Image 1 (cartoon, rainbow, N blue to C red):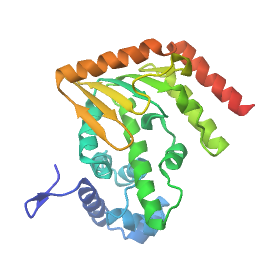
Image 2: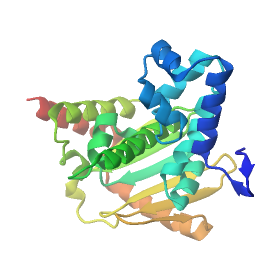
Image 3: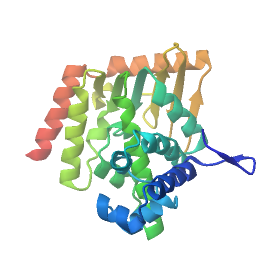
Length: 274
């Protein structure tokens, strides 16, 4: 639990930074020594410790191993990354992290499947300053960090429906797009994941301008999260969740079968390479 100061709950990022500094000082290391022994830039480590930046999850894994503290920094990082999102989305992500069943539809490549380079391109604006770049890197780190939920133990049962539109809007860099298609292909073959493609031939549908995610917990409780271009709505009321489930069922009925969907992804990949 985050510590409380002046009657207010401290941010997850502040707790992470304080824990980071405590471990470094307990080990008797300066930032310079830490940088030399871990291979990370000193100024980068300084900004992480002072909470100016959110690290990538791989950095936390390396430092947990370096300090021999189990998954202490990883656990604090998982709380800190929530600071990068809006309040209602934080609530959704907390539920996502414990869900046993996850169904989602997305008009584009879902964040849970994006490669780091694709996420960086998707999150970048037409013009960036150094400050904007820092913000973008935090968003990338937070997005990629979410992906652990797909393979946590016990593994959730995951069904993803992607609109064909996602495959007709490639990344700007050919290698980025190839790696993204390979990532989608690989995840589609995981035993706990079912991937389907909703083809253009299915025609107009009711989720063309937004995504839908349905989550069920171990106790059977369900929620639905609908997200558009500017806002998201979390629904826990049973009738609302049922209505969204029926909506999802209609999309699934219109989508290609899992085997045909995998063949579709491979055809797009082959076409990109040729």
